[in-house]
Image (tube, rainbow, N blue to C red; front, side):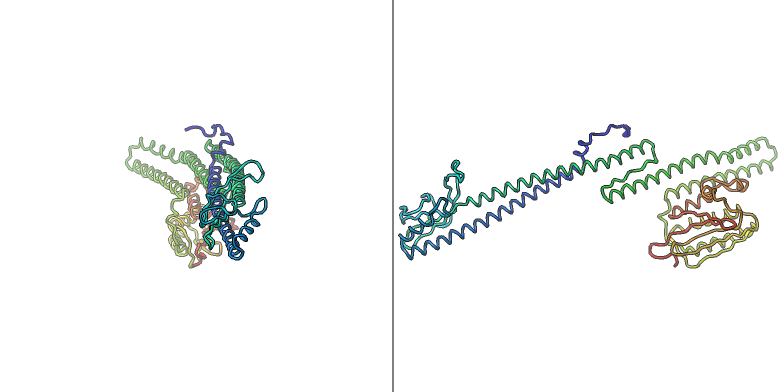
Length: 470
C-alpha cells in the first residue's frame, strides 16, 4: 500500500478542475444554458406571433380604407389615395393596383406578388444606412375590388426582424456573461472546497501515519459538513479510546497476571516432590483454585472488552429498577450480615429505566462486593435507589475508610488497587466492570465522600417517553 502521507500534493488548479464541486457547477451551467435557449425560443415564437398578428391587422385595416375610398371616389380617388399613402422616403405601405388582366394601374410592388389573400414577398432594397443592397421581406394582402380589379398592399417586416436580431444578440451576450460568471464562481467555490478538504485529507494522512491524537478540522462549508467532521472525530475518539484500552489491557495483563502465574508455577513445582497422597491432592486443589481465579480474571476482561465495544445495547429494554435492586439487596443481605456488616436498603418503589437488567444487577452486585471487601467489620452499607428529573440514581454507600480523592478515578481502571487493599482478595476488576456497564448505559460511575466512607453509584438517564418514575 502506498504511503499516502508522503505522496506529493496535486496542483490546486488541477484539483479544482477535477473536483466534484466544479463539475456540479458545469452541470448547473449546462442546465442553465439549455433553459436559456428554451426561454429564448419561447420568447421568439411569442414575439413573432404577435408581430404577424399586428401586421395582418394593419394590412386588413389599410385594405378596408382603400376599398371604401374606391367605392366612394372611383379609380381616380383610389390612385390619389395610393399616391398619398406611398409618399415619403420610407413609406409604411407598398401597393400594386392592377386590372383584371394584370395590367399595372398604380403602385411599385413587383408583378410576382400574390394577388389574392395573404402572402410574403422578398424585395431587394437599399440598406437604411445607404451601404449596399439587402433583401427585405414584405407581408402582403391581395383583395379584389368590386369591378374585378386587384389591389395588393404590402408592408415590410424590417422593424420586427431588427428587434428579433437585437433580442438574439442580447440573449446571447447575457448567456455568455452568466456562463462565464458561473464558471468563475464555480472555480472559486471549488478551490475553496478543495482547500478545506485538503486540510481534512492532511489530518487523515497524519492519523494513518500513526498520529492518533490528530483530529479532522471543521470543513466550514455548511452545518452538514461540520456535523460530518464532528461525527468522524467522535468515531476517531472512540477508536483511539479502544486502542488505548487494548494497549492498557495488554500491559495490565502482562503485569498483573505475572504474580498469580508465578505463584501457580511454584505451587506445581512443589507438588513434583511430594510423596504423600493427601498433601499432593491438597496442592492440586489449591492449584485448581488458582487456575479458576485466573480464568475468572480472563472472563472479566473479556466481558469488559465486549461492553466497551458496545455489545449489549441491542438487549436494552424497560427495566423495573425498584424490583431489580430489591432482588439484589435481598440476595446479598444475608451475605453482608455473615461478613459482620449491615446492609441498609433505601429503595424508592416504582422506578423504571432503560437498559440491560442483568448487566445492571451485575454492576450493583460489584459495588456491594467492593464495599464488603474494602470495609472493616461492623460497617453499615447502604443500598439506595432514588429518582428525579435527571433519572434514576443507584448508590452504594458505606461508612468505612473511603478512598482518597486523588485515587478515585484510578480505582475504575483495570487491575488498579489501593495500597491498603493489596492484602485483600480480589483482582481489581470489579469496579472496572461496573464502570464498563455504566458506560454502556450512557452514564458514568461517580465516587464521592460519604463523610465518613465512600458513596459510589451512577444515574441512569430518563426514558425518552417519560420520567423514570413509573
